Image 1 (cartoon, rainbow, N blue to C red):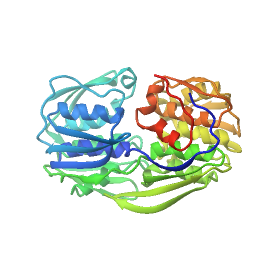
Image 2 (spheres, rainbow, N blue to C red; image 1 turned 180 degrees about the vertical axis):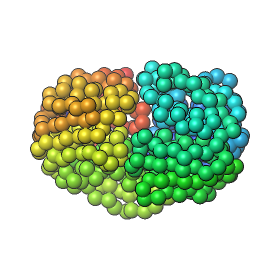
Image 3 (spheres, rainbow, N blue to C red; image 1 turned 90 degrees about the vertical axis):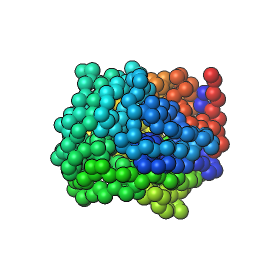
Image 4 (cartoon, rainbow, N blue to C red; image 1 turned 90 degrees about the horizontal axis):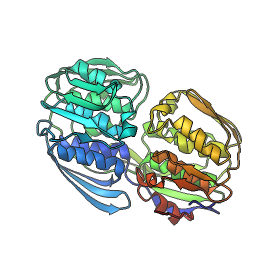
Length: 435
């Protein structure tokens, strides 16, 4: 149960970046030697990847160091050191895990089955399978979805134009190219998260990216250097604390050590454009990734229009952005975000459904939504739809609602941000957990 908050104040640290944590594990597995990643995200979304990598014969150690934080040690065996799993690789609800594994398994001379729970089975996988087949892998889907059967080996690099800007598609193709002959040329229609490129460069791979989104490299039989670094705080997790501080009156908080990679700061830039008092402090670079402390205070917000390339850079943050939009003066319009309907849930539909229970009036569009604000929310009983980002967004909304808010299926709160409730409690929120 979430109660209205009078103010939030203090300092907070969020768990390690989810995207970088996934990559540290999978690129550490195929590196030559032992990799170490501190502040690694120890959560449900990464646990499935750990299970899958272990099933491929890699020794992985996870030493917890705090809420959602751990030191990851991966004893890499090189790209040719993996072994065939003796049972299907289960990805739970993690599309990132499944799509990265598709690229990795395409390089291997054995057959593997990859599956997930019901929600993941609804996610499209043909977009990833198509270029991997062109490279020479055999991939059988279930009407374009999981479960998947993958047989790899003997790949040829391709010249490929991506239909959408997608870091998961980009990473799957690049992973496959690590075991392919020839030169890869990848055309991106817009900016996508570049964590894969940064990490591979850190591991000694010469991979080039042009201003127009063209990515090229030749990596046949290249050895990857082991990793040794600290994972910066996850911007997607930071988004919940940022928005909470902006929308709960009299709040001032500092979130330390956050990843401020340009491909991840879409929401940050939009909130600043709305007038949100957010400043970056102590800016530095860690393992090729920009990092900073974020200082956030409550303040009036103005409605904005969100469309075009910035949508890709905040695609995971639209549920929590809804909370800010409902508090903003004027009209907020979101366009070009049809991808939201293909997430853990149809995020446009469930955002409208659940926020309406709190009294919100949101007009859905096929590729977005519109909100006239400000709107005062009323506490109510809502559902998470097994979507962790929706669950956390509803919790933040409850902090500035009138009366208590009850979230059913609240176990999803810790899926990607372990310690979410405890972090808000430390900042002054009154949240009661009931098992």
